[in-house]
Image (cartoon, rainbow, N blue to C red; front, top):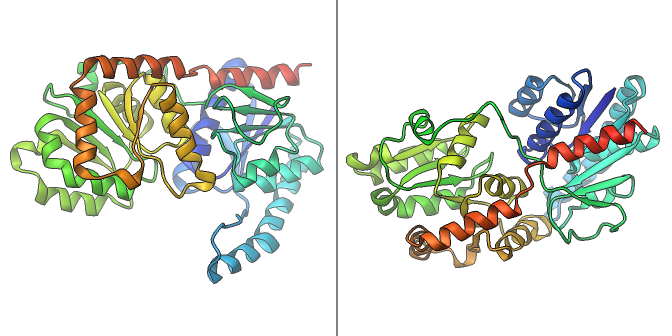
Length: 373
């Protein structure tokens, strides 16, 4: 049995694919898995570790902004890169003959799903956000079923939608005590722990905000700060000047966390500060952690803002928009949660109720049931 994944090349696409791939292998270890799409070296290596065969292709996107450079790039992508990607995908799948294509969406998956439609290969789609992007709106026309993360996902026909949540990687081999996690993460005090989860790329604005209140935070908390590879050197230098020697061991700055350390950091934290990508929200929810979400204001179709408020309306989180984000206000909100055990516990309970830890398993089972009909 051959199952082919398609998706953009970001963590928001790759990590759910890995989660589903693991569940597919549990059901049938003989299943052959493939990925077709754009992917950088980091995610290429992660996919290879899961025994997924990778075919890199050209892909493009349609940019929303109107600057001359963007217009030229849109023309190049629409007339050269996307058609080339379709041809590459078509030839690859023609000889491979996959049984099904599972698209995680994004512009990187468009050439593959078009080729799959031309070859009459069944297509399934997963949408992470409440508001689909242009690529997934387009792909949805070809999909037999659309798996969704949030209730009330917009645009798609209800007959096609199946609510499953967002697939997250759950490593069942990682089952450490809090003391063992603290030792692995080099946490030496019993202060409450804040995890600043900037996503796989980090967030420059959240990084700058944390720096502005870092001395105050470190007096009260251990801070695990995932800042992103591009930001690491600058943050490291700036923080050296801000932190007194007695507080330095409470600051744990890292550019990127591997799967094990990410799980550890989430599970040991008392409160998590994060953007509002669906992957981050469902990782936080699965661990049952209190959180403050700072949605990216310029995300496509405002999907992060809508994701954040859907989660907060459930009672699982607090949302602070960037326009209201000042250092003192931010610090006040963090302390308001940590100093009120009732508020923190309520957030934790609501987060657990919101979570859907079996999302990847449900999708994998559905695909096999479809293929075995």
